[in-house]
Length: 220
Image 1 (tube, rainbow, N blue to C red):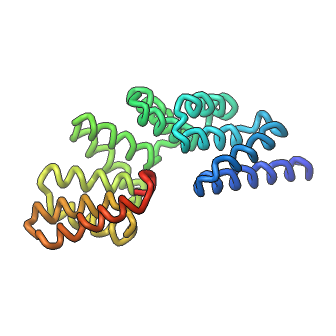
Image 2: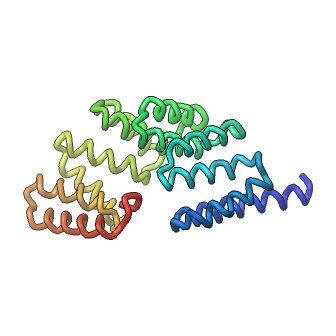
Image 3: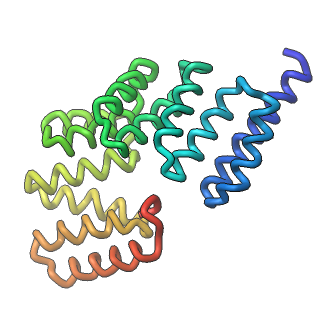
């Protein structure tokens, strides 16, 4: 591999990292400007296509995001991150079968991918298939005990099945790890209310309300 090739790869990595940081900070216009220049210089770079798709997804331009993730996968069929992101966009669009298919492809490429298993577990839970959801979520936690989505849906399954002590333990750990998550505070409030800890439940509900007003939906 030549020095010039290495330098080109480094520039691509820097461009990708910069764009992802700009997207995270919601500086979408600057992210688009950086990508326009980078893609003009490297039109067949899959990482730049993925970054552009991420930008579309962040702005809820879902059809453009799907099209661009698919272009990225034509350039790099082995991209796990692009398939995971594509599945999330499909889910947002209500295309659950397409989301499942994208996640199944992830598991073919990466059989122990906890994120894909957790996303499939969420889809199963939302469809009312609790046994399948529990199997998927449990498998995800085996592969990554700290996966947030898997822990969240494990707690929801515990709550739904009446395993309140287990749900409380899971959610208290999540709240300690992610104190700014309104979602976790709200779920913990539900568990505490079921356990008849009214004052503690009300505190969690108020925290959840305050955090929900403070943060964007993506940060909740």
